[in-house]
Image 1 (cartoon, rainbow, N blue to C red):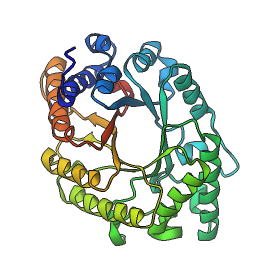
Image 2 (image 1 turned 120 degrees about the vertical axis):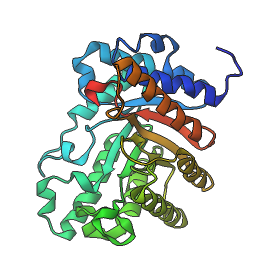
Image 3 (image 1 turned 90 degrees about the vertical axis):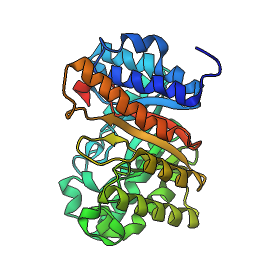
Length: 323
C-alpha cells in the first residue's frame, strides 16, 4: 500500500470492504487480506463493529471480528432492559463474555448504552419520579463502576431527541425524561464521569444524516444540547452519530458534513457509531446490489472524512444475517 495514500483513499477501501463484509464470509475473503482495522489505523481512524452473542455461535463470523476490527460495541448486552429485566435482577453475563472476548483478542470495547428512554422495562414505568431518579443514579453508578478502566468509551445517553413526541426542545419522551426533564442528560454524564474518570463519554444520536424535517430538527437540537453541556462544564468527550442509511429517506451528505464541522469547531471528537446501509431499494443480483451499496458507502464517507474530529467508524454488525 502506498505510504502517501490519503485518509479519503484509505476509507474508500474501508467503505468497499464494509460492503463486502455485509454479504458474509464468502464475500469478505478479498477484504480480509487487507484488514479493515489496519487500513483505518493508517488513516488515523479506529474501525470496528457492534457484536452480540452470535459471535460465540458462529466461528466464521467470530473470526471476522478478530481479522477486521480494532474495537467492538456491545449490541444489547449493556442496555438497561437486558441487564435489568426485573428490578431485583442484574444480569452482566452477556457483557462480561464480550469483554473477555475483546480482552483476549486485544480489541477495545465500547459500552452501549447507559441511558435511553426507549428501552425501559415495564417495572420501571410503574415507579414514582423519585424512585426513577434513585434507580437512574444507582444504575449508572453500579454499571460504570463494574467496568471502570475496562472500556474505551460509553454511549452515556442514547438518542435524546425525537421531535414526534412533541416535548419542548424536541426531546424523546420516556421515564427518565418524565422524572427529570432535559436535565437527565447532564446528570447522567456527571455520574458516569465520577464512577470512571478515564473512560470517554459519548452523546449518541440517530437520524442526523437525514435531510428531512426530522433530521434537520435533531441536528439543531443536538447542537443546542452540546452547547448547554459544554457551558455547564459537563464531561462530554465525543458525539456519536449513528449512520444508519435508510432507503426512501432524503440525504444530503454535504449538509451532514457541515454539521460535523460544527461539532469539530466545538472541540469534540466524532464517532460514526452504527454505520450500515439498508439495500432493500436496490434492484439486481447480489453482486449488483453490493456495488450500489459500496458506492453509497463511499459517497457518504467521502464527504465526512475531511473533518479532523472524525476518529472512529463502527459498523452495526458485520454481516446481513445478524444486522
